Image 1: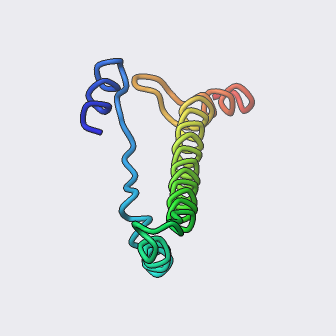
Image 2 (image 1 turned 135 degrees about the horizontal axis):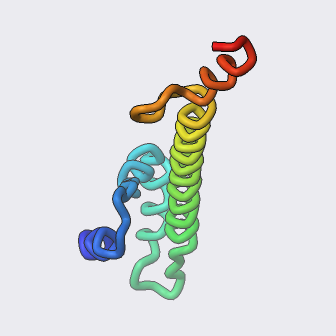
Length: 109
């Protein structure tokens, strides 16, 4: 994971979002224990079956992905809001806000 982060930073990414799969496991500890128990019960026998563990793992990956999607959407919304405010309402360095300029044009300021 560290190597992946270094490669992303080297490629120009300014910020790398981190989301722990271990946190998802911890939040679903009961299901984790059931899946492990079901899978470990038959190790080394003809009835070996890791399906419960694999399904648990895939569900956790989906939960992690969904959480990351929400975080990215919130970040993008924040960036869009900031850009809108800077352009239409807020101040840009060294200038009056566009909103103030428009109001001034209307009322003769």
